[in-house]
Length: 352
Image (cartoon, rainbow, N blue to C red; front, side, top):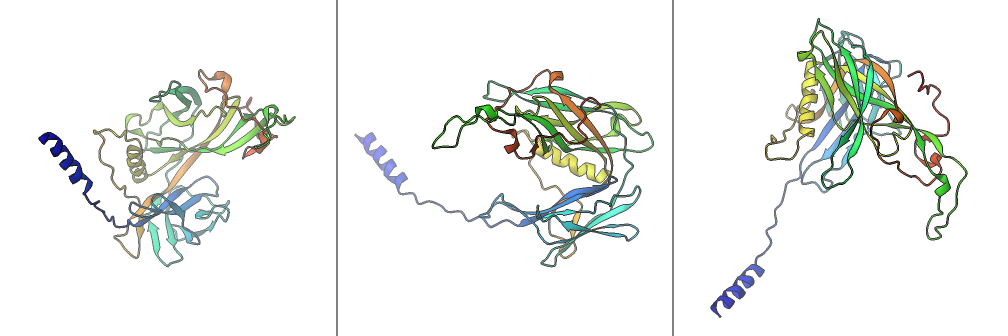
């Protein structure tokens, strides 16, 4: 009986606990700069955004910074104005005729509509290193709790590193196009009718897309200075559509500064934290952007000026060891965004 009263008293005590409200101060909205210029002709993109941090009702929301004045200035005092892309606000483009010159140093300068002024530290353009031969291979990725593995295609590049300098490399995906196959013969009318309504066209299209890498591909030549080596430079996830037939992608090999490489290496390390207790705590990574109005203001991102080499590769499904089951789109392939029933004018899988 005494034990029963003790339990009742305990429950009554727990039921009377008042909730403790914690007020978290709203975090700052950091200006973030993303983009680079290179020795290839433009347009080159610079993106300006602000992200709301922990404590804001808009936490996680990334908003474009519009109507800014954005210029690139070289060490000879020449100024190039960037125009805002009205179809993608917050993105600023150099003229198509602009390209960075070898040996020149460039700074990015920004003035917001509110009047704040920002500048980057100077970035000197390193000579581009030519691409070597490209190859590719299937990669399977085990997924915890799933029977089927994820997969994709890893692209490898042969690189002959110059011996006369310490080189730093950064690889980026450019535009991609692939043969898209759909099933318009399986089309159904929309609900509530939901009746079979096969279409005669079109089964095959060519779809263009911009694919970002799931990782940051970088390297320095500490272990292969002056030698030839083969390095992974891109990974394209297999979504059941890309590798049904032929996939084409353009790759960019950027020769970046040592400071830019350091920044990318730190970003890569934080992006690849596994979430285990052995991971180092995340930290804010300092780029090369500064506020001229408030030296203590945190500005995120890095402006790069780089020597650039480009290379194209066609990936053929018949040469892959593993692909995902074909995804079914029961409709005309032309309804898929970025698709056309005609291949690009320069589509040439046979010629590479």
